[in-house]
Length: 279
Image 1 (cartoon, one colour):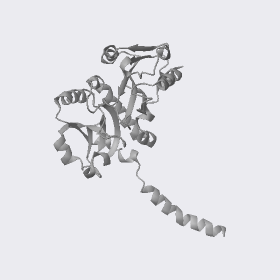
Image 2: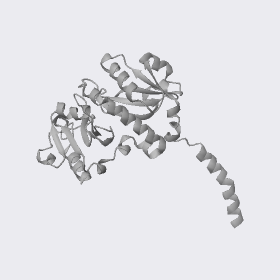
Image 3: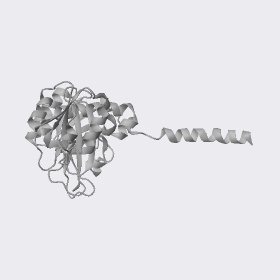
Image 4: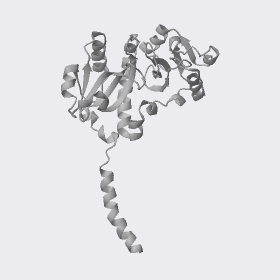
């Protein structure tokens, strides 16, 4: 009987190994990223196209890149020789229209004929309101490009990062104990009181002043950025971020569903979580 079990095991093992060999994880699917050309898709909006051209030329470092139009993207998206960096619009399940813009990095190939939502997504980062962008997103664009690149390299290392997204690679607040946190007052939810933000190293200021920290790349400083629809509806989400003004590392990244009780912006629970993590 023992010999029979050993024999059966010996016969099954190659079959199991063969089945495992057929499993292709996301990490494996994107491991060719640095050898492939990234097509940066320009959407024809001069407001964005000029900034994307300038910042990509200055900052893109992890793969060869070329610029292309939306029309060229449509012709090339089924080709797995290319990755695409493109502005997309996101519509959550209960929303009646897209509320947010994202910067998405996707791989060409299978599924592209069904739409960008069926392409292999490397990462998508919330960028701005879909209907009425403020222009603040262009101040943070250099940081966004660095965040996307850093996440892509980390996703290529293991599937935990590849599948977990920015929420996994942004857990760095424990290292921010000695850093200043600058939050634009416009990024705070109305439920956040002055007492909640009265902690050492936390600065609440107006939007222009907060943005100046990012523009000046002030070391040892995290700056807030919030992305939410201009007119939230049922099913809309708000994204909240803290970004290192100098290194452009993403230290905090969370989202919440917007509701009558929880509008856009950093909620009291976010402020509490930030303060606790820094102690």
